Amino acid sequence: MKALVFVFLIIFYSGMNGIAQNRIQGWNTEKITSIQVELTSPDSETEIYIFNTKQDIDTIISFLKNIDFRELNGNSIDAEVQKNNWKCKIVFQGQRDQVYLYKKSGCVGKTSFLIDDNVIENFRIMVEELLSKAQ
Image (cartoon, rainbow, N blue to C red; front, top):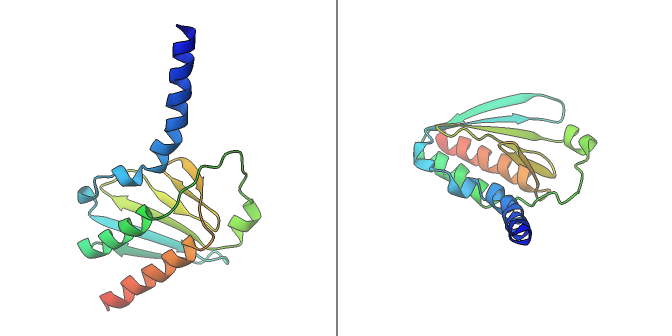
């Protein structure tokens, strides 16, 4: 019986990272009515943008779903690298989780992940494209 419980706990624990990592995939995006994006530059200047068209929301969600959020596995995140680079906070109206993107890491809700270095830059470019289409 103890062995069965032990096996269950191992399977359950190993699946937890996948559940957290795929959290965005499970969102009911139809309930999201707007997205607020806060971009903070390395010199701490913050720009806030609000996107509320269905097309913009779908574009942002699609971008987030394609990010490769990898579990930390004991890796640490260099605070100096995070502090001296762009940061992004994404808040959803109609969805309680918030997403944070940094140079080498990201957070979905309260779970931290490693991400590729270029994600924050690609996200900034996408935001600029959405803003230019709106004009």
